[in-house]
Amino acid sequence: MKQILAILFPAAHWITTLVAVFVFGFARSLHAIEADTVYPTDPAFATGPTLPGFPPRLKTLWLEALARPEIDLKRKAADTIAIAKQNGMPNLEDTAPRLVAELEAGKANPTVKLAAARALITLEARQTADVLMKHALADSWDIAQLIEPALARWKHAPMTEVWLKRLNDPATRSRPLLLTIQCLGTAEIKTAVPRLRELALNKQLGPDVRLAAARILSQLKPEKSEEDARQLAAGDPVANRIDHLVAATLLTRHQGAPAEQVLLQLAVDPEPAVDAIALRRLLELNPLLVEPINGQIIINADGNVRILAAQIFQGQKTVAAVGHLGVLLDDVHPKVRTTAQEALIELAKIETLNATVRETGMKVLALDAPRGLEQAALVLGGIDHKPAADRLLQLLYHANGKVSITAAWALRRLLVPATAQPIFEKVKADTEKSMIPLPLTAVYDSEALAAMYRQQQHLLEALGLMRHRAAESLLIMYLPTPPLRLNPPDIRLDTVWVHELRVRAIWALGKIFENDPQPSVVKSLSEKLDAPDTDEVGASCAISLGRMQAKSVLPQLRKQFEPGSEYNILKFGCAWGVARLTGEPIAELVIKPVIQGRGGWFLESLD
Picture 1 (cartoon, rainbow, N blue to C red):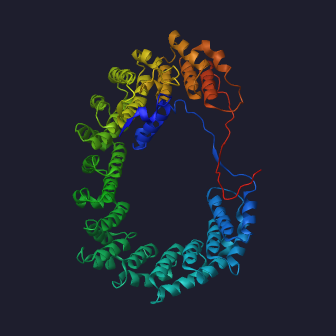
Picture 2 (cartoon, rainbow, N blue to C red):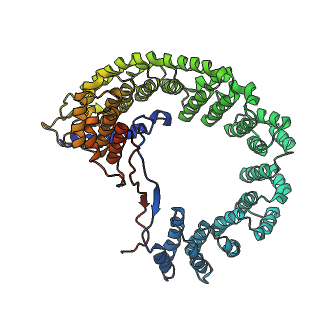
Picture 3 (spheres, one colour):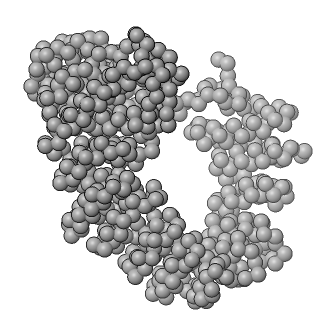
């Protein structure tokens, strides 16, 4: 996407907002393993527990609203009680009697009754089960659909007789029958098994009823359905698609050779839904059972089936399976790729497969397929395969942003000393390029810019971890506070103004000069600590000064906090720095819980 800065951010302090949008929006598209960086965990910044917070008198107001005659007030109050319970509000159980009263009111509005029933179920008010059952049977279908699954979950015995009678009545319509089947499964009523088998095998019924019956039958009777499944699977797979789905569903809890034989047949069915059911069960039983059809499942047209294939290959733990996973690293389906990548990292932990995983990753890394390059970089970085470093250096310049970022991440994981200078040159070139003023009418590639910012997070950390001293003058450039206004009004995309990069550059200085306080660096960091533009910048300075053993700044660090005072990131950074300089324990700071109160309730007190 291309943007024109002159229109969006006219001559103002736009850089922080711009970077937040680009960098973090871009980062969400990357896989979790790529997103980790060292800086926030070395040292780890503390955070307080998050607790739900609720304004006072909420429950009282809602009960008062329930007592009002207005229908909408009653409905909203009941709905709000359920929502509040789901959000962690305590002590709502005593609202149950008032909710029952609304449910039992002679001329209660149907929407109020539905809301009251929903609230009682959410409150887990099992003592009201008899009342709920009465309304499930006497009121609307909407009420029944809401209440009956709850009664099944509570295993409410009086309702079992109703469900069994309904199940065995040929006149029962489809929707009540499906609800009944679901509830019998939830309540684990095994006396329903014979009738469920009849329904599953009855080709005159709709597929929804047959499949629901087969699913619950497999749960209640996980044995002796192999012959039924074999007969259903014997028909033409196109003409008898539902039969094949029922067959696979019947065996979802079966084991043993007869079941395995039918499942293998169904695992290469023309219908992907059948394949998925069969493969999932074979994966649970023994992934090696699938070996004879590996070549077929890896080319299945359905992405969900190929995800299962990747999981199966991981479970097989063979050299051939590693090769299949290498192919899936470049799959068109994102979840297939990431599943294969994670599988290879796990398989590399097996001594007999480690070399094969490394060889497979290098083969994919040598290609020019962006999807595969991204995943191969993640694999090789994840297993610390240092011979990949030269190729990863090349990929820093790849046109695909995800590839260039994952290459930087992998290089930061590998920390091969010979890569320090090339990494420095890349960071320096991008930094200098970003500082060239552009006219207000300039057009730029926002995705490429986001990729550069994201890539530099990893590269700056790598320079720090490899203690690359030549980077000192470059890293010092990140210390000055970004300007509030551009003057003259031009566009600059300076990496040295990006907060996420600034704190990492400061952190890297501490790593580079660990236990070696260079006077010029100490002076620059201490001056910044005296007037930090953000608490996190100040904390990074304090941490780096402590790491460097800059004992001259000890008084400066101490004055930033009092032991026992309320925690913030700057105080913590200074306390950590003092502990590093003195060998004392880190001073205790009070970390208050974060009260995450939800506002905008239907009714709130003005107090």
